[in-house]
Each structure stands twice: as structure tokens, then as C-alpha cells.
Image (cartoon, rainbow, N blue to C red):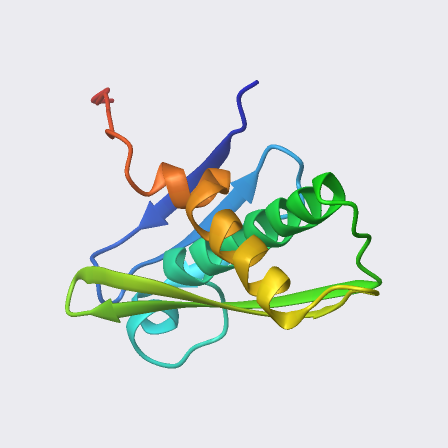
Length: 136
């Protein structure tokens, strides 16, 4: 399976602007810029999208591990906070709130710690990156 997204950019870093689209078209020419990334503007940014991806992946991983352990969540809500210091992502903090019948707080914590390391996005943050360039 492969998933794709595209980015388009025009102009220099600070005054330029661009858009992002996904294969599913959930994002379709969604605006991003220096201002939306490092200041306060309308649009998205790569770190926000990473946070959304990590929150979604982690929540699904928790649901899966809960099911394997015989629990069924009524609701799971996760907030992912990506910390950017200078030009480095220095961490991601995941906060999950769950309504899960018949589970102890210790068991829920144990399950979330497993998902924290095991979800696909958590693992992807440690994989090699490759690229190719085509000059037009």
C-alpha cells in the first residue's frame, strides 16, 4: 500500500505561499505558508499535519490493543502536540482520554504506552528518508 500527497509552492520562503493536497482529496489545495507555519495565519503547516496523523494513528493503535486485551472503548480522544524548537522537531506529546468499561487506570496506561511506541507514525519518525530531484 502507498499513500500520496503533493505540495505546490510559489515564491520565496517568507512571502511565498503554497498548497497541499492528498490522494483522498480530504486536503485539496489546502493553503500553507511561512506565516501559517511560524507565525499566525490561516492555513495549515507540516507540523500540524504531523500532529493530526500521529493522533489518529495512536488512537487507532490504542483501540486495537484494547480489543486484543478484551476491552471495547466507548470513546477515545487524543491530542498530539508537536514541539518545534528552531528548525527541529524535539518531541511529540500524546494525551488520550478514554471511556472504557471495566478497565483499570493502570491497565489503560500500560496499553497506551504500548501504542505510543508501536503505532505506525511513531515508528515512521525513526525511519530512513529518501528523495529524488527532477529539474524542469
